[in-house]
Each structure stands twice: as structure tokens, then as C-alpha cells.
Length: 336
View (tube, helix red, strand yellow):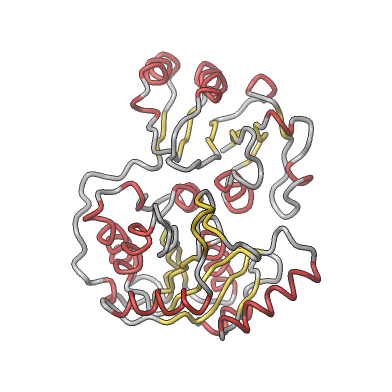
């Protein structure tokens, strides 16, 4: 499928959905929409992903099948400044794919236009109607379950999950991803948007996916969300932790981050404190240990990144790496 990705004024640092699609999704990306960076190319800013031109809007995009909203702002709202591009895409007969909490299928203008032009509006974050509470059965599957957990949002949990699963498959292991967020769902083509379900069903929505495919694979890598100390999203993190009933955890962190993103009055605890928090909370349902760490060093130079990884591994007391920059070998040795 040939797509354009809307990432106005957020690419690349605050457009993790866009970057995830460019790195992992089986899409042919025709262009990225960002008014501030128009005229650049994707690889001017992110060197290790699919390249595409960055343009000011849909008027600068050739034939495509769909427009993907590649931004996931705090609260998942829709900005009116995006409306002209979404409107233009629909009028050209393109589908629109969104991972926002704001559903396009509840927007009267977009619904009428889509009906008129024969387009589909796909709200990836809309859960299905048959979710229910967890039965505490995820540990019953044959697969070994590995869960990525984080010190904060946007530290690399989805990236680490996908990198580990793909590398495990390259080594000959039967591994699959359990997608729990909008970007993972777009990449994998299935999943439950855990942060959108009824709170009582959070753990159940993860358990449902594990029970669905857990006996068909040797390893399941579960995409974590948020952080156990996050002032807004900790409930989602806890629900995934208990619903997945993982044996092994991978603690994800961004080098140098000291405060909760978007909530800078909240300081991050120490790394050992995170290990204790996650392991103690998991143990109330199913014992789990932090076996490895993943450190996002994208903003550092090579030498600084290697020092940061070494320091993180020493503090964590477990193997650690930047899975994009340095590969996954050390982590998989600990996990598989």
C-alpha cells in the first residue's frame, strides 16, 4: 500500500508513529507531511529508515492509497490544522488511517466526505466490542512471554519489542509480537489498543491476544505502554504487566532523561528502584524479573552512546544495549 504520513511540526522526535511506520511497516511511503521541514528528506533527520520527501501538505503528494496520521499527541486529540490535508486526501479518494483517541468515524464532515468519495476511515484505536476482564490465564500458554516495560513514555518499548522479535526469528526461533498500541497495530496488522479499552478490561485485552496465539509460538514479545510511575498512564502499564503474566521483562529507558515527558515536575526514580517496582508489582500475579535493558541513545554521538549503554548495564545489573544502534545479540542471549 502506498501512503503519505501526516506529521506536521512534530517530525521526527514527537512523531513516533510516523517513525515506527517508516522503520517497520510494509508500506511504500510516498511522502511525510511536515510544514516546518518541507523540502528536506526523511533520512536527513532519521538515517536508518525508509526514505521519502518531506512536503508541506497533500497538494504536494502524488497518487497514494491512504493518508496515515503519524502523530500521537498527549490525549490523542485531533488538531484543526490537520483538517485541510485530511479533507484533501478523502476528496482524492484516499483512505485515512488514524491512531488517535479522536475517532474520524465520529467526525461528521469526514464521514460525509468518505461516503461521497468511497473512502474508508480506519480508527486503529477503536477496540472491538467483546473484550472482558482477565481470567488470569496468560501463563497457561506454551510460549515464553517477554514484556518491555519503561521508565517513561516514548523511550523505545515498541521499537525494542519489534527488534527483539524480528532478530529472534532471524535466529530460527518462532517468535511473535503482541501489539498493544496504535503504531504496533499498524505495523503488525492486528492487536488491541490497550490504552483505549474500559479499565476493567485492560489486562483482559492483553490476555486475549496471548491466548489467541500463545500455543502457536515459542516466544511472545509483548509491547509495553507508559510507565509504572507515570502520573497519567500508570494504570495502562499495570494492566499490561498483570495481563501478560510475563516471565521476563526488558526495562527501556532514554539516555539522560530525568523527568517525566510532559510532566516535568515529576522526577524519574533511579533505575534500581524501577527494577524493584516492576518485579514487586508483577509478583503479586505472576513472578517476573528484569533480564535486560534497552537504552535509546538516538540523540548521542557514537562514543557517548557506548558509554551510556555500559553505564546503564552496570546500573541495571543486566545486559543492555541500544537495539537500533548496536543490535540485539546481548539481549537475546539473556532472554532466549
